[in-house]
Amino acid sequence: MDKKIIDARGLSCPQPVIAAKKAVDAGEPFDILLDSQVSRENVLRFAAHSGWRTDIHEEGADIILSFKKEQGV
Image 1 (cartoon, rainbow, N blue to C red):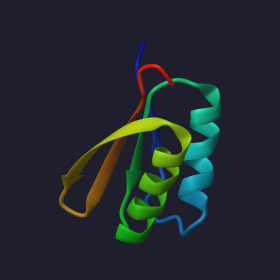
Image 2 (image 1 turned 90 degrees about the horizontal axis):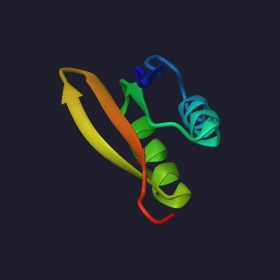
Image 3 (image 1 turned 120 degrees about the horizontal axis):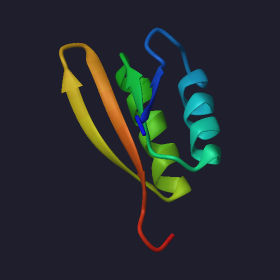
């Protein structure tokens, strides 16, 4: 099964956080693509409060956050 990828580049806050919340509510791991440090920080804050772990990858101007459910949460 392929991991869901959400392209939130070019969206202003709170749209990337709302997109991440919808994916979190679905309960499956996913990646979200961002292009703003403000969006990065807001989505990371949301992830921390929702019990999901994120891996961060930056490729040029693109930021990729990979969401995985914390074990035991």
